Structures are given as structure tokens and as C-alpha cells.
Image 1 (cartoon, helix red, strand yellow):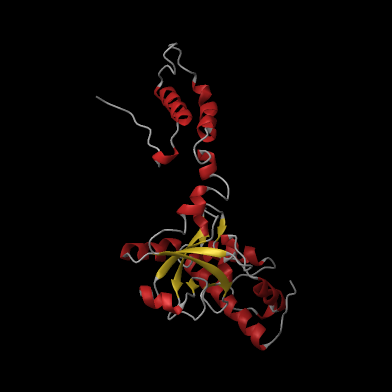
Image 2 (image 1 turned 90 degrees about the horizontal axis):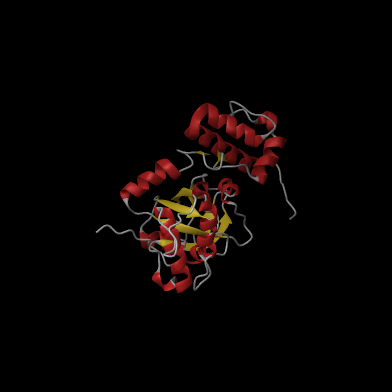
Length: 269
């Protein structure tokens, strides 16, 4: 005998009201009468109404809408970056010496998990768009601080800043996962993000200052205009991910050289 089931993720949240609602909606989906008192089949135009009922039906701990929408849901509080094998969470700090696809981790963590020069996946909650997940290569041998050092160029795409923000980090020791990180989530291989309609790397405050102050001295870029973000986009469109990545990295090295040896720039926050 064929049977249809509605599978809920955790029986602990079941209760009588929600069970009745789900049973009624399953009959609607199957084109069956919703009650035994009548043989009337509901019109397909009722889809929106029943979908709203599913989301708002009270459960023991809120509703499906409470679990899956917004910034303070149970899914985001529990499922991501916590109680997960080979994952960790830590505060992020800037490290301008890193290439745009590298990350600094505590040396004892690098040694314990033997992740020298391996790829990891970084994400800042609650940003869950595909473009907010990025693969970074662990800078060996790590550093002495108990926090994550990340390149400034990835901050804007992750909706992060350095006022105490924390990020989730996932270790992916599997060889296939390492290959996927290197070719799919690595900004050097995939600089553009089709979902977010932009680049995974953006300019920094110091980079902008030097770019405008030394505009006529920047000869290593094959194309440049007053808008640096548009310059990056044109370089990506014309030369592809790998070459555009190298141009961005060259500009990073250039502004560090200028700020350390030629001029001093202080930003008052």
C-alpha cells in the first residue's frame, strides 16, 4: 500500500495543533477533500494561505518561521559554527600582510590539526548567501594570537568589520573538499559571485587613499579609472579571475609600500 509522509526534522516540536494543520495541508496538496464532512476540494489559489499557515502554526518553540527567518533563529543560533565536528568560531582582526586568499590562525591550532597551507571555509554569521562563504589558505606556521587574521579585501563581501565580529571556520581535510575549495570558493579561481552580482574582493580604506594620491604612479594596472571598484570589475571582465586577483594583490603590496615608506595616513574613527 502506497503511503505519503510529511517528514519533520525533530519530533520534539510536534503538538496537536500543528499536526492537524499539516494533515489538512497534505490533503490539499494531494487534491483530496480536507475534511470528512464535505467532498469539496480547495482551489489552487489557496496555496498562499496554506503556506502562511505552515509558517505561523505555533510549535513548542515558536514556529517554522521563527526557526528559519531573521538573524536570531534557532537554526542560526545552534546549527552553524557550534557543536559541529572540525569547526571553530573566533574573533576576526585585520592582517594586511596576507594575500587576499590567506588567513592567519593560532599556531597551536595549525599544529594540532596539521592544516599547514590547507584550505578552510570562512563565514560570518548571519550572512548565509553563497557569496558569504569563502575559502582561504592557512598561512603557515600560524601566529601567537587566539583570533583569526584575515585580509582586508574580503571584509565587505562578508558584511564584517573589526569591532569584535566573530566568524565561523570549517576545516575540510578531505582531498576532494580541498580541491573544491581551491577551484570554487577560492577568490583567485572564482573572483566573481553570480548570486551577489559583484566581486568577492573589494578595496580597503588605505588602498583608496594611496590609489588617489599616487594615481599617476600606478603603472602596473593595464586599466584604471577614478572609481576603483569599477576598475576591479573591468579587470575581472577583461582578464578573468586569476589575473584580476594578481592585479588586486599587486595594488595591496603597492599601498603597503607607500604607506610604510613614503607617506603616513591616519584615520580618526
